[in-house]
Length: 52
Image (tube, rainbow, N blue to C red):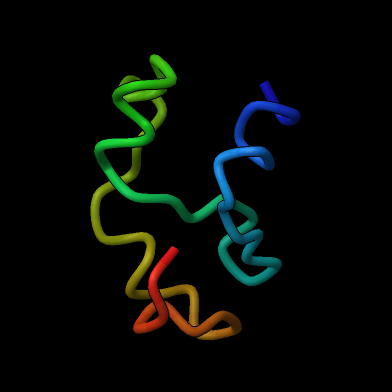
């Protein structure tokens, strides 16, 4: 799973301890059951305004 997520061009947030990726990509990879709403807003250690 980690390899697939990394290949999708995601970013790791040490603060949130989570991979940050687009919702569509999470659904495509079958990870929608692991999504945490609002977590990306708390991940201030990465720039979420840049296209993932």
